[in-house]
Each structure stands twice: as C-alpha cells, then as structure tokens.
Amino acid sequence: MLGDLGKRIESKREELVCLTQDLIRIPTVNPPGEAYAPCAKYIGERLFSRGFTVEYIRGEGTPGDSAKHPRINVVARREGARPGATVHFNSHIDVVQAGEGWTVDPFAGVVRDGRVYGRGACDMKGGLAASLIAVEAFLECFPHFPGAIEISGTVDEESGGLGGVAYLAQKGYFSKPRVDHVIIPEPLHKDRICLGHRGVWWGEVETHGTIAHGSMPFLGDCAVRHMGAFLEALEKRLYPKLAAKHTEMPVVPEGARKSTLNINSIHGGQPEGFDGLPSPCVPDSCRIVLDRRYLIEENLDDVKTEVIALLDELSKERDNFRYTIKDLLEVIPTMTEKDAPVVKAVAEGIEAVLERPAEMVISPGTYDQKHIARLGHLHDCIAYGPGLLEMAHRPDEFVVIDDMVDSAKVMAHATHALLFGGTGAL
Image (tube, rainbow, N blue to C red):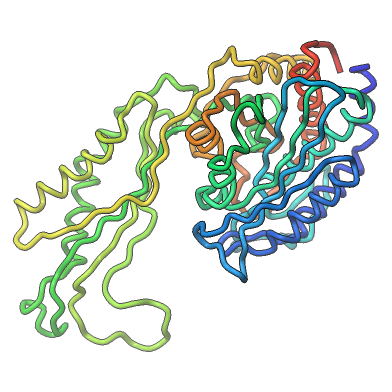
C-alpha cells in the first residue's frame, strides 16, 4: 500500500505543478498583507471538497490587521475512522515583496527547466502545495485512517507570525489534545529535517540631540554623530566578541553557527520621501534597528546587556550622549529532540524515499515553530519541505519540481508512520 501511495503522488505531478502556480499567482505580499483572504479561500475550498471541515479565522487586533488587509487564516481538519493522533501541516501563505532583478514575472508561476519560478515558490508555496498533494494522496489510499489530519494556511510569518500561528496558538489550535505532531514545510531541502532555530532579539536604539540651524551646528547637538559613535563601538567592541561565539546546534549555513548582528535600518534627521531639498537643521533624533541572532548557549538578558553596556559607556565618554532603547521582538532559541516522534517519522520517510539518511539542521532564522513551542507548548514540531533556503527572498526564486514530488512522498510516508505506527518503502 505504501508503494501505491508513492505511485499515486507521482501521478499527481502535473497537478502539483498547477497547484503551485495557482498559489504563486495569488500575490500575498507582506507587508501590507495583500490577498490573504483569496488565498485562504482557495485552500479552504479545495480541502472542503475533499471532506475537510474548514474554519477561516481572522487575527483580529494583531499588527497590520485592518478592514483593507484582514489577517485571514484557514484551518482545515478531517477526522479519521477511529480515535488516534493528529498530524498537522502548517504553511504560511504570505510572501515578501518581489524586489528588483527578476528575469520572469514574479507572480506568473513560470515553469522552466524543471522548476517553478515566482515569489514564494521556494518560501513556501511549493512546500504548501507538496503537503496538500501528500495528504490528498494519503486519503485516497487510506480513507479509513485513524486519528485526524489538519492543514493550515497562516499569515504574517514573514513579519513575526503574530496574526497567524501566534494568534491561533493562543486559542489552542496548536496544543494537545487537539494536535500531536506538526510539520512545517519550510524550504530546508528534501533531505533535511530542521529541528528548530536560533533566537532573535530586535531592538531599537535612539540617540537624542538638540535641533539648531545647520549653519550653526555648535548651537545644537547632532544625534547622528552620537549614533555614529555607537556604530563605531559596535564595530570595535561587539562584533569581534560575536564572531568568537560558536554553538553545538547544527545551524546551516556554517556562518550562522556563531552569533550575528545585522543593522536592519537607520533613520536620522528629517523625514525622507520628498523630492525637494531638506531644510538646514541639526538632527535631534537618530534611530537604529538591531537584528541580533543568538545561540541556545546564550541568555537573552546577556544579549541585551552587551548592547546596553556599550551605550552606558558612551554616556560616560561623550558629552551629552543620551539614548533610549526598546524591544521590538524577542524569540527564544528552539530545538526539538532528535528522538521525537515527528523527527523519527520524517527521517524514516527520507531514508525510504531518497535512500540516504536525513541531515538534522537548525535554521539560521526563526519561523513559526517558535509560537507552537512557546504558546502552544507543543514540542513535537519540525520544519521539513522542498526548496533551497538560499533562494528564499531572492530574485528569480524557484522550487524544483522533482524536489516537491519527493518531499510530498516523504510527508505522506511520515503521515502514515505517525497515524498507523508503521514504516515501509514508498
């Protein structure tokens, strides 16, 4: 029967490609959160026609939610013939902006050279399509399965997931006894199981000055110069310390096995966005956003203290150095145990389908597993899906069709193992 399941997925290759194209052609760009409702409806209607009960759940009051851009999530569930575990496939439907540099239309779903191109093809509409085909093929082969299967399409993962998985997790959608095992088809590649991710702290630092006429800057106090001193302190004092930190977590790529700090943005002086010349003023404010990724061996309080200590030193070293700092986002590092049921089931699937052992990895960036672990208190959760992580958010993003087919087979195999408790070759 498992061999028949593999053949069933092979027979759905063209359907898988068309499904991926359809999803890419719904431009769910975030921000601001476009076309969430049409995409959720597309998924929901497909699953409703296959016997799922479907809910559309709006993340009301979450960042970005509005009448124009409602945060619409879809959760579909199909009960089995008898009680048992629940396997949940969760994919985010939002994609980042297309940006420049494309050689194809980013929202056309172009098929060429065995690949589907488009924004979100890799991250992660190819994975969503593969999970849908995997589950549909499984249901055709095993209509009297035990337990339950859920599929969700959630929003805002690219901006923190607060209107999507976090909102649902707070309402019990990712907790026992409703759900036992979660697979998130993020693009870590078809032979890798992603156990979790590094931690993140986003902080905003603002340096303060005094406005004055630009021809007499000595009458004011330049906030941008104060920020420049802080940037110099980061370069000379903090970056070398971060480069010396290493982790035992199997983070990919290799460069992410140490602590990192990205200067996300900097804004100082007068507002941008007009075509004329600025007025001559000394800037009284300069803001910078820090994107600090940290390791499971580090403590979040220590991560923040490293930055605050530099700012406090500058307050003593520089005349009139004043600052404020605020937290924007905090995520604790997450790593599922290698012997967890969902890890073992997907590993068995990879070995059966690809005939090689699964590689266990950790993502350099966070994804929605953080909310499932922290808010849902469910730790039998991993990321597994087709696509090359390096292609995410880039021009000419693509997913390889063969990889989607293979990943669908692995997902179907894992579903069988988790619901029936059996293994075998596809």
